[in-house]
Amino acid sequence: SSLEILKNGSIQDLFEPGSMFKALTMASALNEGVITPETTYEDKGSVTLNGRTLYNYHGASYGVVNMGQVLEKSINTGAVFVETKMGNKTFLKYLEKLGVFDKTSIELPSESYSKNTILKSGRDVNFATAAFGQGIELTPINLMRAFSVIANGGKLINMSIVDSVKEGDTITKTETKILKENIFSKEALNQLTKMLVQVTESGYGKKARVPGYNVAGKTGTSQIPFASLGIDKSGYSEKTWQSFIGFFPAFEPKILMLVKLNNPNASTAEYSAAPVFGKLAQYIVNYY
Picture 1 (cartoon, one colour):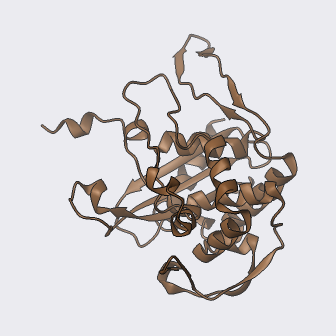
Picture 2 (cartoon, one colour; picture 1 turned 30 degrees about the vertical axis):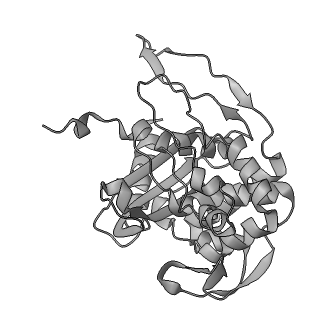
């Protein structure tokens, strides 16, 4: 009898996106020109900021890697390296432009959003974890809108839902307005899209591939904070959100899709959300 089941998770559940967010961090840095896809750095498996040590998943260490490999292997310290190159103020400026601190104002009731006040308090470690999608929270629809900026040539749009499908399949929908343009340059987006295709070709997103098509996407596995589970305790539980976000065909995007699973019985999104995305994408490709 819980009213919880009536909630629309897409617009009402805040979550931490995890490594999916690395794509937005990378796009911002490519746009600023502080890195290129070929930029390398040495990953030692961890990085310490404000007295707090941040680790890669399973404490893995990858040595000298380039930015493409940071996304392919989903390296947390790589996202921190990229954010540090940009600087907190610049990173924050992009997050604001991408609308992650605002409602999308989609035409559905009771949309949630988070101002992420702790992140904005300005500590280096908070910006560093946000660079790989922990300690920053938003709704699935908000992440979709931010990611759509990559897919649609650098434009932030107002989200709208299909109003109705008439006979003969003419879809009427509310007018889509462009809220901000040129957030990312065409060159930065082209570089990033190639990197996101590599994620599904040779990285952790292989199970999201569709034969004959380029899929640009990113996995995300993030620990669920106790607070999100309704437990009055700071810090993170052992439970995870596992997700995959992507668009296809990568260089002429038609479909953007997010698969989000709440604590599935799998170690990471590579084995849970990515295969679901792949099956759905294949179905959609066949349908169209």
